[in-house]
Length: 108
Image (cartoon, rainbow, N blue to C red; front, top):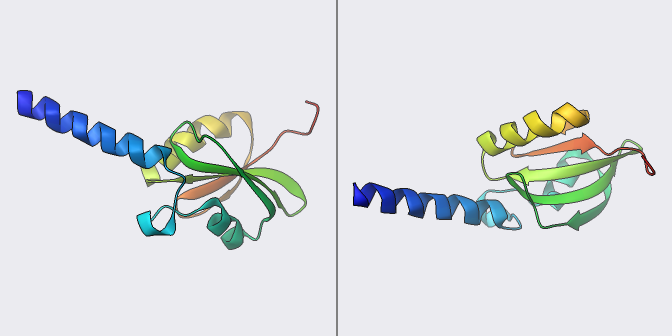
């Protein structure tokens, strides 16, 4: 029983470390710059710290609209983030381990 608890603690620590990293191509997690390039977004401005299961965040422009790009370590984290974020704002783009949501208009 004690070994199971230790193993579970190690796994949780590893997941939290992966979720809090800035994201890199070496880890398989796309950077926000890579995600922006794939979707054709411009004016990319990374910010952090990432929360809610995302590995990294950036604001960017996509087809004339202000969006937030988020990257993820796993599809499950992406799904969970989109389920919450998609309630408040439209999902504009979904890629492989990244997504973009519409930012609210300034002043709202």
